[in-house]
Image 1 (cartoon, rainbow, N blue to C red):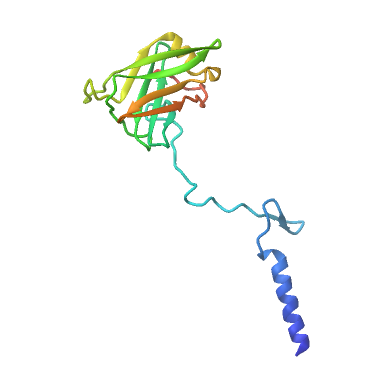
Image 2 (cartoon, one colour; image 1 turned 90 degrees about the horizontal axis):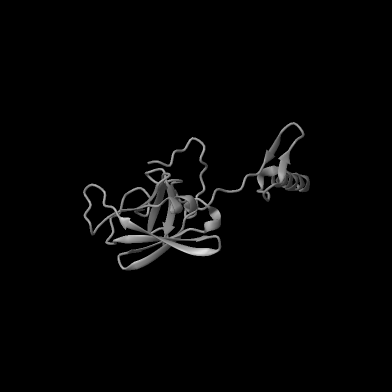
Length: 177
């Protein structure tokens, strides 16, 4: 009977040390022929957040608030256009504003550019999701990381500010949208 108990204990020990128990990240278990690497657990579902990499006009997204809204910055070689979008960054949100502002640094000095409301079809003069400025100087600075460009806009009496980060490459990409 005692031998049977010892064999049972030995078998349990062999099972628990042979790879069934989880190992810290980066620890491997296996023979010289095959190596099985433990992979980190997937993130908790509350950490997973679907977020588009660009806006519906293929522009740079700017988070406003805690993703309550987004702005999409699009430009060609002559003008900059900003679209106000919903929290999913997929639908236009007309707002009651005559303009929004882009603040940036150029040669160590602050500069400010006001983009006037430019209503889309179906929007009114006092309720626009699109804002535009024809200014080659702004076009030249908006993609420059050293300019630290920031967008400010008031939506429903709440001021929002977001950093314009241009993080996609230009190869095969035309900014004229």
